[in-house]
Amino acid sequence: MITKLFLLTALSLMVSSQNHGSYGDPESSSKLHTKFPSENVSFIEIGQYSGEVNDWKYKKSYYVSKSFKANWDVAKAICRSFDLELATFETLEEFQNFEKILESTNPFSDIAHVDGITTKLGSFSDWYWTNSGAKIPYSLLWNPTQPDNGKGSEEACLSLQKFQGKYGFNDYFCSKQATVFICQKTQLFHGCF
Ligand SMILES: [Ca+2]
Image (cartoon, rainbow, N blue to C red):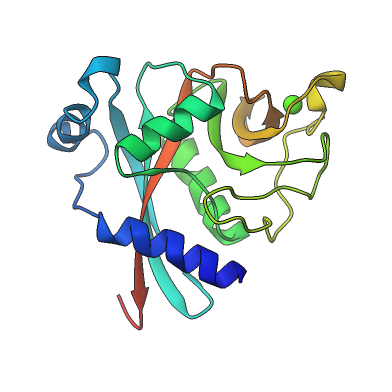
């Protein structure tokens, strides 16, 4: 079931896939920007990844919003308005690759919304990707002292945080605006790339 959900999500993204330029490519950013002019949102592509899940190969491109604050729900809606999704990391290997992308591009210095929610506040392991409904299948690399549920608040959404110079996961308020959010485009392949 989880595999089916993942494939359906990825297939739907593949249908709307398009070619993008590299990091900072003005043509790519401009093309995305023109789809959402009223909110003045644009993105920078910061990197790509190729991986494999259940015999399906996939390629992803990651996009970081530029200078537009949004809470988690709005961030998710904006990603979808560009035929993107809030970023997920299907495997620990994919996330570790993404950490390297963050370290090399340094696209934000505080909090960034990504996909992922929990119904067990403060939980280390009960987190789900909302794009697919699948439970996150590996141990998230939390920042020190995280997840802390805001010391008794209601931090039910997943984020990435730069803390003491290093990027890691943080549970964060769904309702609070983050400076940036991270979207992705996924292409799915059966067989070879
Ligand atoms: Ca937290």
